Amino acid sequence: MITFTADHTASLRAALLAWFDRHKRDLPWRRTRDPYAIWVSEVMLQQTQVSRVEGYWTRFLQRFPTARALAEAPLDDVLAAWSGLGYYSRARNLHRAARQIVEAHGGQLPRTSEQLRGLSGFGRYTAGAVASIAFGEPAPVVDGNVARVLSRLDAIDGAPGDRAREARLWARAGELAQGERPGDLNQALMELGATLCKPVGPTCLLCPWRDACAARAQGREEQLPPPKARPKKTKLEVAAAWCERQGRILLSQRPGRGLFGGLWEMPSVEGGDGEALRKLFDPPAGASTHLGTVHRTLTHRELRIDVYALELPAKAALREGKGARWVAKTELDALGVSSATRKALALGLGDAVRERSPGR
Image 1: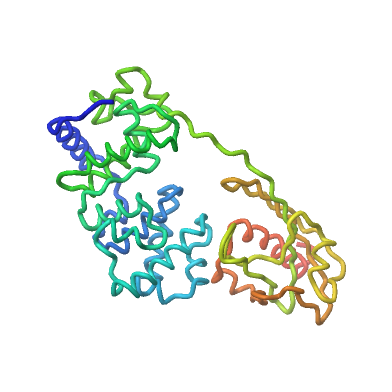
Image 2: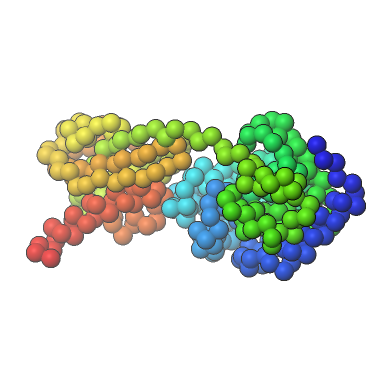
């Protein structure tokens, strides 16, 4: 293991900060010192590309400008604002943490990483990022980009998730965080990984650390870190019921935890078909018509949704109707709905349009 002297660490920090000052991207959350806004950006950026986050972040802050506003909003409204961004547990934790901030901290984010880690959804990375960027605490961060940069800088072997490797990465990040501008230093590490030190084809000649990089000296810059073993995706096949009455669509809310937790969807059956959907209702629904199929690739699943239009008797209701409601088509955008469900709804909406406009 390479041991950095204080002078060497200072040299690395200076080179990286100088590079960051010249080449950092102009991102909206870098133009604010509001800890709440910085926190929201860090949560959104987890497992999501910057280009997708920019618009969501702006709209989210317009709707929920403070932690108190977020805490006082119904979870349905928060999920609706998050709709399409994915990984919805982030939104639920954000809402839960906002309430904790109001109840225990007077509506202001705690100023230290240790205190932040007492809030829902604040792991070691998020706490370090917010504490360093918003409050100037020399707290380290290690995300995927930072791990790749430091693995190459120090030629650290080991697969992602290996305890010894993770300990070395966090120790190295901790050394680098000490000094002036810890928030900028951490952002520079992330920026370097996102723009130059990429998984494939790193642009080493433009890197401020090219002469200090042990992996480059060994000709191993594209071998480190080794790729993370990807779990095999499982298939999830669902039948969903399109039920319409007087311009309203029947939706049900998923349980608060698990896949798409707390979001709204059409009544559905895993592994079923139109016949299984008919039996969800009392009395049973009439004929079912297959409207189409939606395919979505999720992190660990290949999702297939077959949408069936059902003919409901006048007094038919879901046998387990808790959390079900009839929603006007104009209200759909105000609900928390996954991208997969939105595509499934489009099949029914398109069918309804064709029925109203024959021959077009």
